Length: 597
Ligand SMILES: Cc1cc2nc3c(=O)[nH]c(=O)nc-3n(C[C@H](O)[C@H](O)[C@H](O)COP(=O)(O)OP(=O)(O)OC[C@H]3O[C@@H](n4cnc5c(N)ncnc54)[C@H](O)[C@@H]3O)c2cc1C
Image 1: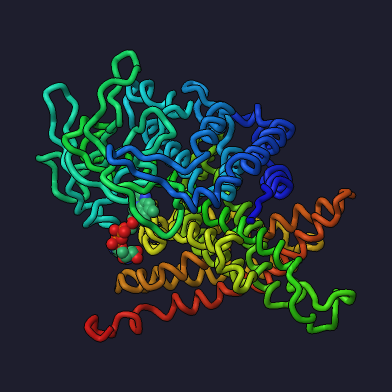
Image 2 (image 1 turned 45 degrees about the horizontal axis):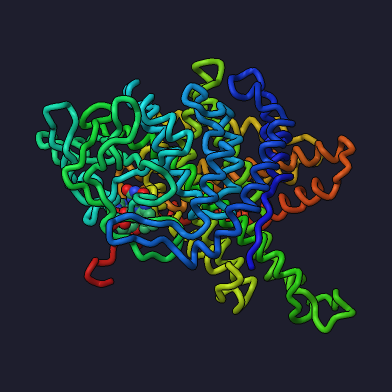
């Protein structure tokens, strides 16, 4: 049976010693998040996921969701009781606005807990994750009436949320969407169309489901500029907030899919359903982007979380499984063979995952901190900087983390040999569950295009300049710090690869846009690696500091330095390969006639 232990010590180390959240104690939300309170929350959160949701991961995958003839959907056995426990304990509202019943804690704390939740049970966590995205969209563009009607119940968890973009003939290219919104005399709209692949579209966990739906009004342009966003509740809401009539939106069928079987992925039929415009008409994509940006960071976290849980199970197996002898002589002399963790190739797979997980966790938490600073930092300049940084890094966190998450899950499966392919060990489920994160919320190819085509150029390249400036200044400050040279020097070389690649793009993408398209994925990986390098340098700095301060758990800090050395010597040098790929341009990619494939 697979198991999971929330990485509490590592998370606390990053919060308290690497990104030092106590530096922000004067900001709203942070003032309440004392180290003791944060520890207590994370310890309770770890207990909750280990005892309540993780035990439902395998059974939820085997059982899946069931659609009944009346269109209702039941989630796997145990999900409803676990959801009720989650709601009762208030886990869904950790970072939500206290004005709507939330606890008002920083996002960075909620993000740490969310990683635990996803590792324990990704399919279950999606029911809550999408609600958070819907809350973000309603908060950003909803009217006061819409906010007060919907958000408090969504924060409380009695209502959940969905996002409805995809249709049978359109996923990436939303300009093609056909769902129609006809104005009605009372100011509402009648929504008609079919949406597919809708996560958590119908289920039995909450008493109402609030669908956020993209549709076009009859007199709007039939392009991406004519899309508006609508709130379509499963049950209409009476003026006093009680549930009214059942709306004409229903689940037509459940998709049969590769993984996340515990999450209902629905075909949703809108048959003249009552909907309410949210935000400005024809500006629906702008509103939906609020939701998607929040969701993309959550999906990035899915990559890290699947990498972590599959790594943990691979380590347990590698320490136990006896096969062959170490190349340098027996290590388990009393036994007939050595545990496979002695073999360098098994270690390569484990170290790749370990170094990714710890660096990515730091980047995810640092990114969540930027989300907090976007709203709460003291000055407009700091808020703008945080917004620039998280805007730049959102496609990197989504695309790089989820590609690595899948790769690490597959390698963890590889560590188990044939047993990794057998259901009862759970590794094959982690691989199947991790796979979707590379596809939804905009495929990773689209994330790379967003990074290269939009984020690099916006505001004259301000975000990248800020980010590179920060890394440079870190390198300059620590170049001569004792013990830091071995970490800072490779980071400088990797940053040089990033800068040379950026210059190449600027010189060659304008003349031939395919050069930007061809470079986009290697550029996203390059930025991911440099970002992890930036985090690993800070982790190493904190570890050196811990050791110098006479910490008692010296092993923890020494192992950080060992893992950091592996990252800088074995993983970061890949930036040079990505630079070479970027500079190779698009010619050899594009010259083949399409018929020749
Ligand atoms: C399990 C699951 C859950 C989902 N949940 C939701 C949900 O809750 N709500 C929702 O609205 N949708 C959801 N989706 C849909 C998902 O977001 C889309 O599948 C995804 O955005 C890709 O769209 P598509 O499948 O139509 O692929 P396409 O858009 O047809 O893309 C096919 C391939 O072409 C590439 N491509 C397309 N256009 C370009 C381009 N311009 N440049 C470069 N490459 C391009 C893509 O990267 C991809 O590799 C879900 C999907 C699944 C499978």
